[in-house]
Length: 323
Ligand code: NAP
Ligand code: GFB
Image (cartoon, rainbow, N blue to C red; front, side):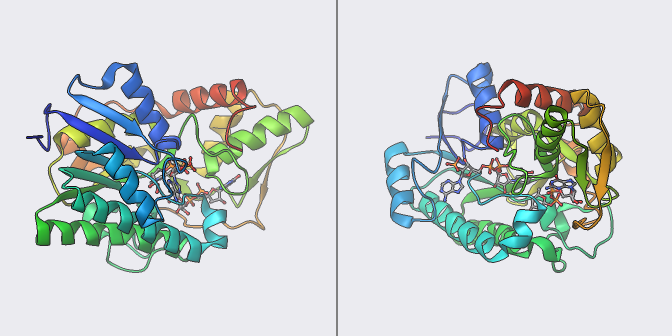
């Protein structure tokens, strides 16, 4: 009998295991954080295209998981979302329905899926908390991704109400770290700026920050998020989602984030702001008070240290980094 929490025997399947968040969890698991009773498998899309129901069933039949950390998704920054809202909806709805329904058919004890703080209503009071997910339309820039992610919360409630399943979700804020997607057009702001700073330094050109630099974000280091995911796997027992983010007081402007990268990379060139490019959502300030009730003493890596480690990793792994 597997326990749905604590230290009972677990076969943990991580979908999206080859991505930014998956690789951070793998780094901790391989670094000794796994318990002797836990067996971990990390999937990429080469193991199964999870938009395909038959391939999803085949990989579950092969792995026979008792627990699933469901990360696999079509993911991207503001500019990729603005270009492909329909694809973000379709890809993610197919992936999520296949993974959750197959997990149900396999009697998986617990599934932890992934929402995002960018899916909350655009017109809202602050700080945002877990009760506000469905209180109004998301920002227009990423409605496809946002509605697909919101449906995970609806599905989790359905599987719990109808079948008693322990299917829950976490809501990370903007994540960054090693193994991120550093593609300038498709990726998120921090990896994009790290890549652009690297090229500006190499070519002696200015660093171009898109937008005004005024929008504000909370950033969580992928290794900190990975630690929290392992805690959620073992201890979190609510169906209701939980925000995994640094505190409101850690929110920085895009300009300040760019300055951290400039300092970490030792860039001495000019920094300019291209205000013809969209700012996207001005802010999505989220409260982590629910997390703090469970883990009052959890220590996040200081932002400047996490940025430095990520920049150093990118420079050392430029040839193999996703870009
Ligand atoms: P990522 O680096 O883009 O990785 C995405 C992962 O999903 C990869 O392992 C990819 O496999 C896999 N995948 C994509 N399409 C697939 C398909 N059709 N079939 C099977 N696997 C597929 O993303 P991430 O940043 O780690 O995000 C992980 C989760 O966190 C996602 O659910 C995302 O929505 C959520 N999240 C991310 C952020 C953020 O700022 N990054 C913030 C909040 C929430 P391949 O490597 O083979 O392509
Ligand atoms: O990480 P990002 O692309 O997505 O950040 P969001 C966009 C903000 O950074 C905007 C500014 O204000 C941009 O103007 N920015 C400045 C840049 N320079 C750059 C750059 O070089 N690249 C990028 N990408 N932005 C996403 C959602 O919103 O948040 C996704 O669209 C996802 O669905 C993600 O959930 C976590 O934080 O605006």
